[in-house]
Length: 476
Image (tube, rainbow, N blue to C red; front, side, top):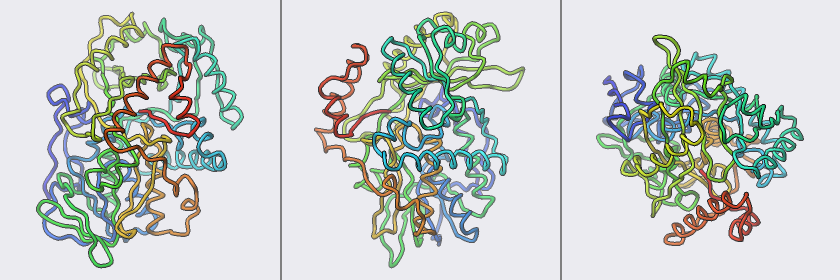
């Protein structure tokens, strides 16, 4: 067995996130490069959350299954190792969005979300996953007057569905986070927490291998085709013959299966991470609750603390969001992972949020693609006569929702009578995005309309009102 290389820090390689750059060494039992012909019951394309959770659910159902995971680069190299590390239990991109699109199923989806989150936490404990999980809850911030009323409506909605929430006025909100921009907040103490996303991916791979799966890094799948009653995955240097295959590549899915492009647009999100803050710097802004934070603008920021051990506990701030970028033709690739103009914009916004941290520098910057659908929730589908299954389109909340998606994919293989497979959430597709050049033009117009809404007190212009009426959106 060969071992994987150490991933270089993002300070020297802008395609690598702080998360991956903070990890040394290979994953025990994971191979580098698939060689020769391999037989499997299930072949999984993609070594991120969706693929690895699918493997776990399959092994829960039948530990004897021969499962092979092929990852193009290293485990978690895509969105699973580039995201902000927010674990939100929602399966529907928030309660309001779920109610809008699945009013007849929202009660069941809320129960399934709670059960999936509880199952994830139990899995972490059972297998001792070292992923730095902190059950901090979430704090949604109002940074404009119109957002204070929006938070009040959000609080009422959450209370109606039995969620514990606390609406905070300006003084109480600033006691949680001392920023001159904060006008109020909604505290959701039970809404998950934060973790180290790349560690979670790598730990899922470690456990999958320990349970009998084979995981191959540096094993890009170049072609998928029918082979008799099964499928064939062609990999540089080898091939996998399997009864069933799962495509778990999210924003990169169009490069493997072209038909998936109609379901999503890849939106590039960019992130900054500060140098470690000393105790005095951290005290200037409070944040003793360590909640995951986000503001309520259409073009929103998300931010969190990262605890580093060694020489006493130290904290960095991760700051991302706002400038969601779409590249013509569903563009994805390392050439888009670094965008200096967005980094400059994010830093300027950070200085406005935290003027008391003017002496804090940024050490890490990176970007990555999020797959967003028109209703902000995942789409499930199949190809090759049902032998190739896929799930994609988490619109920024994949850390939690991908575990549920993995269960749906596993049930389609080993439990076709599962009640999960009768939900409209898992069986209906969102409205497709139009082809180019209409796709690029549409996304550009919507981004401008969202920015205009933020500048005009949250008012929804004609374009946004039409899209709201037909249930189509654009988000990161």
